[in-house]
Length: 598
Image (cartoon, rainbow, N blue to C red; front, side, top):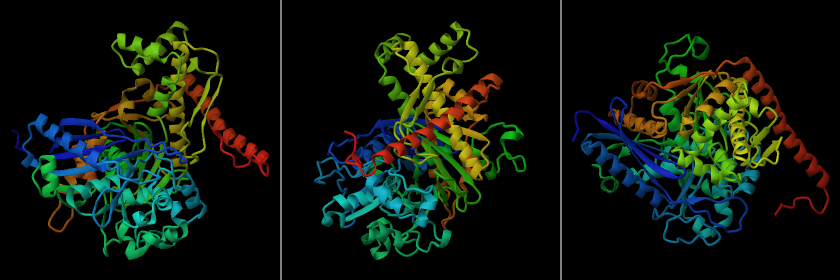
């Protein structure tokens, strides 16, 4: 067994799977493992799509992944010095008196033996609660982009209050999923700024007059006044009074005996304060060693200075895409969540834009096309996945027609893809998709062009988010991607060309997030007796690897075409909202007002 140097473990819990990696002190990944986690979609007839998970199931998957990476890497468990966690921003519920998982499935809220105590981030059941919260126009909403998304956790807590038996709700305590995992690992109910500031309306002490972090008048106004009792103990308490808050990777405590036995690790290993999965993607990408021109970096400071991060947008792409940017001071961007202080590096601020569906959007548009099944068979026969196969087919189509670019093939096809609503910068969950230029083409060619238009939409919306952030005061000059979409050459080229800036792809394309989580373990392991730890940026600078750069092709004709498509894209978004307002005005006062379509 190798024990010549220290090792660190990263644990990432995504929407569909748990992953673990083990890295050495230089940041090299020695082994990687993944296991699917269960997802329940109860059909209770209640409004809004519902998605549930179980911390018991998730923890079991984590244990299996950790044991697998230890076995595959042949690393001595005693050389593991730190563990970092990231997870989706989902709500986990336990009893405050017995620490048992509380089922979140209405209307009965009975435990079916699966401990379904997690309401997943993409669960949209609390639409009415989110609307009620946003109608308060409370000042804290300034720090979540002006509106609290239905994907955040306070609307979900309020939904539970409105639907649970009162005696059961009175027993509940609430965690963001990553904080629940550090709690399971250590037994300590320490909360992360990343989770609570980004997703629970926590405003750090000293920001805009915040005294406790939690806002008592906000809770009272929305109907959660009972959570104010005992200094918000059921939400984690008040920092320095009956609770503790930490920035990313700060030392929560040591791995407990029980958790150590379950993971196959010795007790006492340093556990770092966790982050939301997208933020681990920021950690795992923006420190990459890259060569950029002065136009795409801050030339007034050293290439590895932390302020270079201010020019780099981390785009963490999976089912959806999160867009993260750091700034020295607070920057308020309409429709972009934040600004959030202290969530990654103390004293610095983060902003979070996002697209509700990107990977899921491409998957949906393909799978619902009549030519999909036959094309999948062709792709399998060619030994390729559907995306690579269609990318090659698109190139052949352009070549056969002597088209100057693939974009030219869809020049008169206008696809707007907010099928799941808009997260940024419009921040309207009622936005939907639209197509102008649809024909009766049922062929593989027609599906390929629809697929390309979907990627074009993703690229144009990325430009919209970047422009909204820069207009408000950010200085984004490059995009650092992570996730499986990085392997899609055409999509990366489209984003670089549409945004007119370089796109950086990390070495660990499919492991940037879990790699970032492992760096949190390294930070926790650096803790001195007084609790201070090595700066996160220094760890990122030391452990990040060189990446690949995708540049805009610089074709003036294609750029002009995409600029025109961008103007049409903006018009499609604007007119959709106008159409909805016209219909609502026409129905006002009629018997049809307020009726939901079946």
